[in-house]
Amino acid sequence: GRVDDRTVLHNGIGPITIAVDEKNEQTIKWLEKIDPQCFPIQIQENAEKLLLRKVLINCAINPLTAILQVRNGQLTENFHFYQLFRQLCEELLTNFPEMEDMLTFEDIALVCQRTANNQSSMLVDRIKGNAMEIETIVTAVLHKIEQRKGHAPILKNLEMMLLGINGSEES
Image (cartoon, rainbow, N blue to C red; front, side):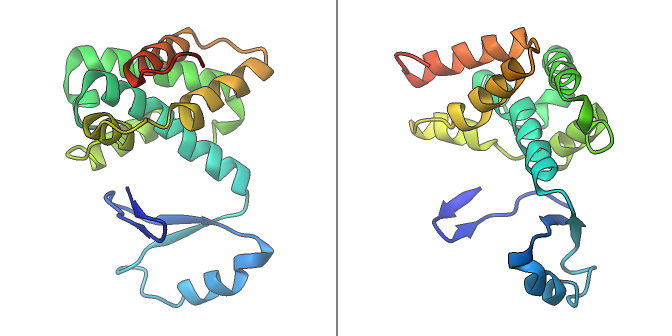
């Protein structure tokens, strides 16, 4: 979660994944010297796929938790929420077949389980009365799906619900 312009809270359990580019090679070399038991990191060669993976996970979790007003773990613990969650994940993964080697439904469900007691950033924004990051997460993924001539009716409905909750006049 974002605290301020320079600080984030790392609430999940597991390694931090970093994409390699010319600008951060020295930093990555320095980070690799740190004890991996204390500070586990994974290096990813393809920054675009890494970002797409992250946004798809957020797109699968955040809209549902914000609308249902539940913590992340409820998406896998509550039978009815799980059905919605699974259908949304399948819809997202079907529209991004190139992610098959990097992201599965099980991966997304594991994020929910590892962050079971956490509130998604979108839910936190809703509770605090702040504008939710709908356009940067949900709408952006919908645009990408539309560009590919894909179909995402569940996600489109979630977007409309979120925009309505957020008080947005148009999308």
